Image: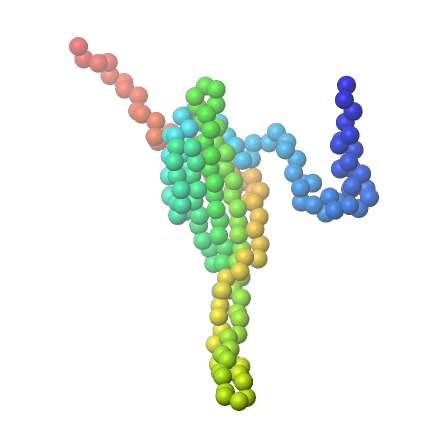
Amino acid sequence: MRPLHGVFLLPLLVACGGKAANSTLLHESFNSGDTYARNVDVAPARACEAARRVLLGQGYAISSADAAQVEGSKNFQPKDEVHEQLVLRVSCAARGDGNAQVFVSAVQDRYALKKSPTSASVGVGALGSVSLPFGSNDDSLVRVASSTVQDALFYRNFFERLQQYVEQMRPAPTDAAPVR
């Protein structure tokens, strides 16, 4: 039997105040929760089409979509000088029975408006160059935060809406027997 050298390393770093003690990675549990994944009873291509429709129905701009993945984004402006963008990435993988397992993650980026004063340089013969401010500002959006959305209710609502689209996409059963 091989000794487990690395098993005691992480607690040791935490106890000694090493860099791992402050790391966000320590909060990752890889537990068996299903926050980011669900099984659906359709093929992966149909599951991804349903996901595309969910995003379109909520006002997302689709940046890419195919039979195995969908990516969409939506922009928000909660304050005058703050901009937020939510990007959803959906992957549709085949299970052993041919149906799909759908994985989704959302990343929220926050941008702030940063102003930079602008000046101009003027060359003056024997004196050299003189820098003069002319009262203009260059405004630019700068990303100030980025995080994966971890709200279980957010994902539960996505998957409930996904299931509604999956149901709408199923062929209607025929009640009548074929005429011969």
